Image 1 (cartoon, one colour):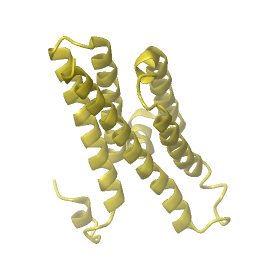
Image 2 (image 1 turned 45 degrees about the horizontal axis):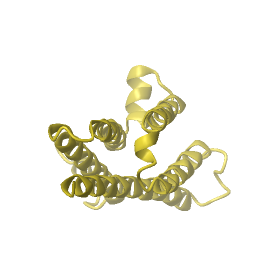
Image 3 (image 1 turned 45 degrees about the vertical axis):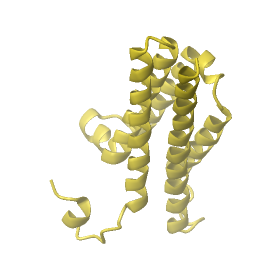
Image 4 (image 1 turned 90 degrees about the horizontal axis):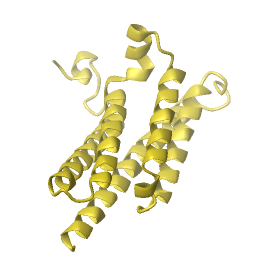
Length: 175
């Protein structure tokens, strides 16, 4: 029940960027869920509402993974899944979402997702290559690149979907 910083005897700001990432992810998921429910309730844009709901669920999973370190620890220990399996699952979610919701995605500023995937790809690449690049780059810089790009990806992801939701609600209001 206690905060990890208290339990570990750490500074109160320990993990602050990770915590901010969880807050951004949670806010993004909440906005996506809210907007999808509003559109569904208004019986307008049901396909778009389902698109937002799908990505609300995905955002929630990503955020829970970040908060509870699922792919780094819990899924390995309790399910026997290697990190690569979690990453493959995420790629599958993204590809399925991209294919199923391509029409809706094309109505948005989807180029921002390219930035997101570039940032997350960098984070995953640094994470997966951490043993190979050990000694080539200072560990503090490696962590800053890995976690910093993940954080910026989360912020960009949530910002993208906040813009998508706002624009769709304004469009519906003006009909």
